[in-house]
Structures are given as structure tokens and as C-alpha cells.
Amino acid sequence: MDPRRGKATQTASKAGATAPKLSVRSAKGPLTLPTESRAAPKAARPTARAGGPPRESGSPQKKSAPGPQERPQDRAPGARAKRPSLRARDAQPSGAGSAVPAEGQQTPTGVQSVLAKWLEPPAVPRPPLSRTGSRRDRGERFAPERKPEPTPVPSPGPPELTPGLGRGEAASSGWKPRTVLEKLRLRRQEISVAAEVVNRVVDHLLRRLQNRESEFKGVALLNTGSYYEHVKLSAPNEFDVMFKLEVPRIQLEEYCNSGAHYFVKLKRNPKGNPLNQFLENEILSASKMQSKFRKIIKEEIKNIKDAAVSMERKKRGSPAVTLLIRKPEEISVDLILALESKSSWPASTREGLPINNWLGTKVRNDLRRQPFYLVPKHAKEGNSFQEETWRLSFSHIEKHILFSHGESKTCCETDGVKCCRKDCLKLMKYLLEQLKKKFEDRKELDKFCSYHMKTAFLHICTMYPHDSQWLSKDLELCFDNCVAYFLECLRKEQLKNYFIPGVNLFSQDQIDKISKEFLFNQIEYERNNRYPVLREF
Image 1 (tube, rainbow, N blue to C red):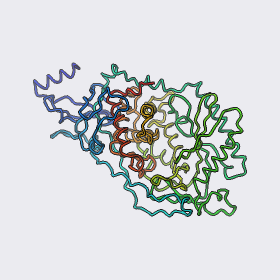
Image 2 (tube, one colour):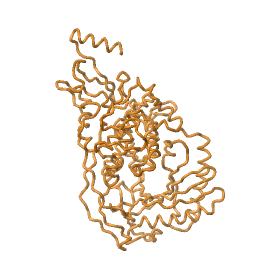
Image 3 (cartoon, one colour):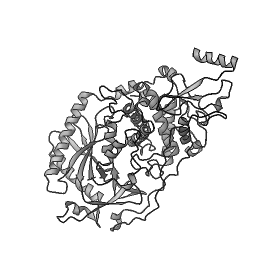
Image 4 (cartoon, rainbow, N blue to C red):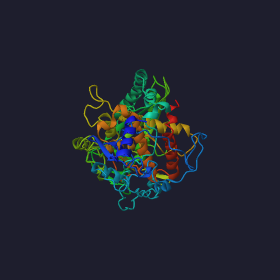
């Protein structure tokens, strides 16, 4: 027992003095929440992990004992334990105790707003898109029925944390995040070899497209994805490359108030437009344009002599043309055609990119003056797709944010203080990746991807904007809070698109409830048991 704590207890019991105070971090420094005396019942005590990622080292937590409905720790891999539904769990109190102060206590104003957010009820999931079928099937342009504006998707807010191990028990748990990160670190030599091969293939294709007297003559490269954001895991074996094509005179028509998908019209051009061949009833067909792009790439890879390159089969609903390079190592390259528009961002993004208190209002305004992109990822209509629709993409903005991620402009630079933001994102992505491998014979995790983890991570950075809340020494605690927030998103079925707040990535039409419950159970098990799946290399 901490001798200081024991002394405080003896003083309180003998003289009836004020009980010791429990420290909670805030953006400006430690706040103190008054606690009751040790004689008070535990249920009346407020939780100590309400705010920022760092947790006080003097408050070790314990493993929560498995209840009758919890999965035992020694269960067989893949076995499904019977658990209450997410909606049933939502009505149950958190394992960390009530977030409401005990009767008679005074809650500091700085913490009161945080506690209020905890009590927000979950939002009603957005209704699915109308099941109208593809225009291509009907041979005519689909004029979608205009629906009322969808209810904005509220943020889940700070997570309702459940007990986990504290600093005092971390040494014996076998959970060492730095060791995991070291295993995931890209080796310089591997990066050099992979980048050289990929650049050679991409440059060959780019020259072919630019020299062709066709609609793709004006394409240029825009490197995006985890490799270029420096959050790639283990090996440089996956690359995302955008071939951007500027289309200066376009008009967007939002598809069914989706916020993310649009029909693209070409404004009249007296000199003619090479993209006219892709029009279908005055709409620029995403599927037609993607098919032509794919055809050119397929023909041209046959002329690449210094690398063994093949094209994978088209994935339904995917905007990418995927190449597989087998020499010297197997590397996957996703080529994505993107329309570049330098006009104002669509109205659906007005409340998005909430970085004012994190990176600053000026940075946000500057980023919103950057172009936005449209990729040929079609809106889903039940079991089919609306093949003429394009989806908004802000991957270039995500790349900028991850490069300049600190409240301080020198965060993680040579002379700056190192934070653990990117390390937390790497661990979050790795957690999902390992779970998908562990349950690769099941379909529940098929619809989850690293973009869900990245989106949740960006929201966490918005909630905790200060560099002091992401100190490198607090990596384990910051990561645990990131996981807790993601669990809260799954539990409430709410994960807002970071740029389009009206789009809920965890709505029922995006991911079914059974899949969300399955992932929730697996992550909760990992968190309660110190992430055993992360130690399986």
C-alpha cells in the first residue's frame, strides 16, 4: 500500500479531516475531484478516468472478474460467448462505476461538461439508401427521390471506461507496446527496395497515360495511404496511388441526401470535352470511366519488362485497380482514378474537419481551400450499386493532418517533444489486423477496415487536442483510451465520417449489428486481458 495513502486514511479516521483528493488531468493542468472517505460505499465514488488519455500512476486498476455473461479467458479461439446485445448493454451501468458524482458532492466546472457528454443517448442510425437499382440496368437516368435531411450523427463523446490493469500491474502482464511497435517498424532497406519497384511501375503507367491522345492525358500522381502517412505496419507491401485528373467545369448533384455520393455533370465547353464519351444521359458515369482506365492499365502492364506485374480481379464496389508485383517481393498496389475539383467543398462537409481547437482555425481554413477529390466508389443500393455515382475523398487532407499532427508546430520534430499519437494509430490498426487474421474463417469482420480505426483516432485527437495529453511515456494509457473510445463507437453504433458529419460509418446499412457486436466482444476481451493478440507475431 502507498504509505502516503495509508497516512491519509489514518488521519481521516482519527480527526475526521477532509478525505484525500483524486487527481484528474485536464488541458491546463491537474484538476481535483473530491472523493468520499474510505468508509463510503464504492458505488458512490466517481470514476477517476473521465478525461484525457493519461491516467494517474497512483491508481492501479484490476482485471474485471468475468461475470456470468462474459467470455472466460481460456475459451477456445473463435468460440462465441453468449452476451447481451449492444442495446441491452447500453442500458447497463459502466463497469467503472457511475459517471455521476455522489450526492452532496460538487463537480468542478471544467469536468462538468465532460460528464454531461457521457450521458448523451445514442443517436438513431441513419436509414439505408433507397433500393432503386442501377440506372444502367434500366437504360435511363435515375432521378432519386429526395429524402429529408438525415439527422446529424452525434459523437459518442468520451468513452465510458471499464476497469483495466494500471501501471503497477503492467510489468507482469506481458503487454509491452514498445516491443510490439518495434516489431512493426519498417526497415529502411525494405522500404528502399519496395519503393524503387513501385515507383518504376507507376512511372511507366503514368508516362503511358500522359502520352496517350485520350481523356487521361492530363493525369498526375497523388500519393496517399498508410505508407505515405508513415503509419504502415510491418512491411512496405501495400501502396495506394491516386491518378488525379482535374475537371474544372463540373456540377455536383448529391445522391439521395447521402452527403458522400454525387452525380457529376459536365458544364458546356465550347472546345469540347474528352470526357464526353463517358456521359450517360448527361451524367459522367463512374463505372464507364473506371472500366476504360482499367483497360488501359491492363494493356500497359504487359510492356513492363523489369518487374513481374499482374492485375487482380475487380472487386465489386471497389474504386481501385489492384496490381500485384511478385518480384523481388510480393507487393500490392492500388491505383485509383480521382477527379480533382478546385471549387468549394460541398455543403455536407461544412461542419466536418473539427480541428479548430487542435490544429487551429487558420489551418482548417487553409485545408478547406485545397481541392477535393471524387473517386469511383459507388453508392450502395441494397445488394446492388448505383454505378454512375462518385464518392468524396479527402485522403490528401488526412495525410497532411498526420504529418502535422501536433498542437505545437514542432511536435515530433528533431528538436520538439515526442508524442505518441502515431504510435496509438499503428497499434489500433494492428489490433484490427490481428483480429481479422485470427477470425479469417468468419465473415463478421469482413466489413471493418483500417479506415474505421483512422476515423476514430482523428475524433480522439479532436477530443484531446493538447500535446501534453499524448506524451510518449503515456503510450500504454493513451492507447487504452483510444480502444475504449472505439468500443464506445461500436456500442452506440456511431462513428461519424471525419469530413462529412452526416455520414455514420457504423449505421445499420453500412455494417450489420451482429458484426459490430462480434468485434465489440473480441476487442473488449483483448482489452480486459492485456491484448494477447498483439503479442502473437
